[in-house]
Image (cartoon, rainbow, N blue to C red; front, top):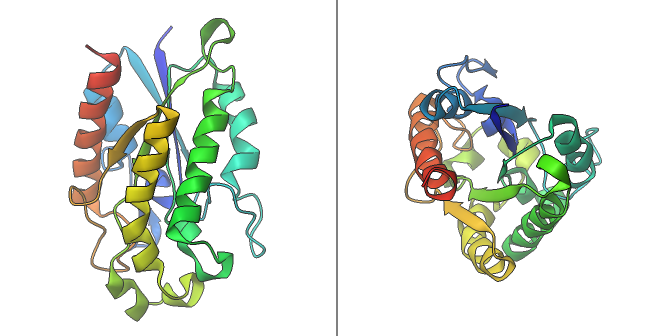
Length: 214
């Protein structure tokens, strides 16, 4: 049986293309590029959903709370060796009234749930890698997404990774901070472009190599 990895995230895991408003194809999405680099020994399972939050119910849209969905999601894909979580961008929305620290707390709570879900082989628990997505850039507020996102999303997105790193270190969870390594696009400033997907895939592969392949 292949070694199975679930990538649990939002539109940047789903592969949203801000230029076409559609989905990037395989061979462009970071998840599919990661699968190519890992080879036939692994199976990479894409669990991306546009608008997904870590622990918040969105009053405007159904089914976006990652915390309430992740247990059945992981059990349906079991057995799993690794779960990769990349969330936080949507949690910055003004209507949720969360601080950067609150957003980090939610992601860590989600990580704790994964680490206690018996979705690995023989009822064990999968390893977890949490990724801090690239920060939203301030130019987002001059685009159409500002109407949905609201104010100060870029500020919260910029501050969140430092809190996330501190809390995950206490939890003992592997962490990859993409701040400074990968950038959002220059269209809506909150989604990855083709180059962003490529860069992210390489950084994630290097992290997985240190966790699983050595």
